[in-house]
Image 1: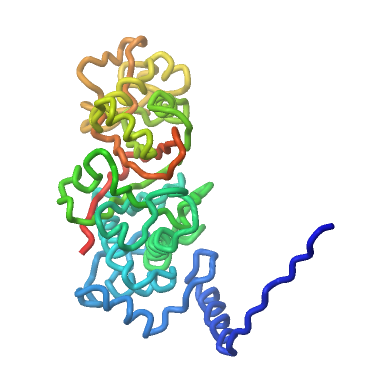
Image 2: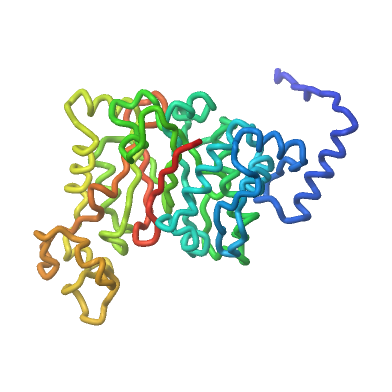
Length: 360
């Protein structure tokens, strides 16, 4: 016999209808990413602003492609709409400021047909305090802090920057991270945390913004990550790619036990993800001195001449060509208990470089 389940009913006040009307009004104004938003009333925005000492009218910069001015206040408005708690607001502010740094090249990311999305990696003591998930299902749902901080970042790009499909963005396929894309690094990492590696103190909490084109989850060790890095989809960007490698804590601690440092991990991935120049050419890529003389797919600018180590001979088809330099591989420890899982995220460094900002 199948048990019949009855829906649980809850009595709500009449104001519930007016709240729904306010949500519908936000849809009509075009302020949403397709999901309902929290109506940004004055009292909610004021509560958000109470968590920073900065002037609400302070200009943070202009957000492309519309180049409208981002202020502390209109970032707070979008944080409210995303569903952020007020205490999350300093993290959102730091993330927006990081994206406005010239080296992040937000203009390219907003207009790219490839559909790149900004990933926020929060590292430092405040991540645990705020409940930003660094464990089980780290890239998935179920955690308000991750979901709303990531969404607030995207709503700023939508509402301030005008990154609206077919208007301000021309992404052919789009990116699922455009709804929300935020994780925290575990505070029990066996190595230096990401923000310390990038020049900040252990007591700081920082947000590192990374422009991510693709996400690949795999079960296995470093050899599988290296194989993915050297796979065919990467060929057209050889030497221009950056990787964010997210290792589960079990893998990280096992590597540490065996005496591996983060630099050792980077060197291994660097050495084992090289591709033969002949194979690269056979699959449609090119190098200076390899292939047709008019083919300028790679090294088309003088500042890219030193992209390859001196020992690489691009005129020799048997040469092994590095996909990425070691310093362009970020190592992050995150995820839950479940041995062997890791994630590799790819970005194009010729357009955008990771930027880290302190949360204050």
